[in-house]
Amino acid sequence: MQKITPFLWFDDKAEEAVNFYTSIFKNSKILNFSRYGEGGPGVPGTVMTVSFELGGQEFMALNGGPVFQFTPAISLFVNCQSQAEVDELWEKLSEGGEIGQCAWLRDKYGISWQIVPTILGELLGDQNPAKARKVMEAMLQMKKIDIAALQAAHAQG
Image (cartoon, rainbow, N blue to C red; front, top):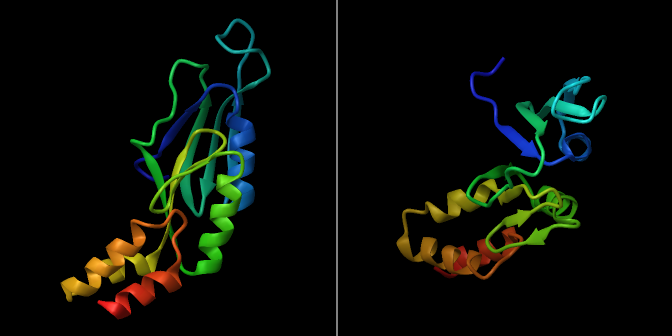
């Protein structure tokens, strides 16, 4: 068991969201469900908590009611190895959600994600400040990250 587990509070869609997320990410699975019983705060028989893994990382989800909402102040950062991986995750996670700038999106359940190719950090960390600046300028114009465009900007620096 990992020491720190992100805990996600949903109104009433925890089970649906977890099924959605585990269908998207490799090395993902549902670990355990607990359900509300008689006399509790939730509807008896409905999911109270779900523990699950995404890409080997453990999470916990709760159907806790409409008390709290997700904000972009917390996001899930996904390192992608290729443009194909960026494209696939971007398409699936943004469906029914909102697209933001610079690799950010909000899914249909309200969770904010950053879908980022690993090469972005490498290019932004270039020792040549002109190259790094060109990459930053290119990225700031993007919604979904385009690796080829980042590499072209890097070459111009």
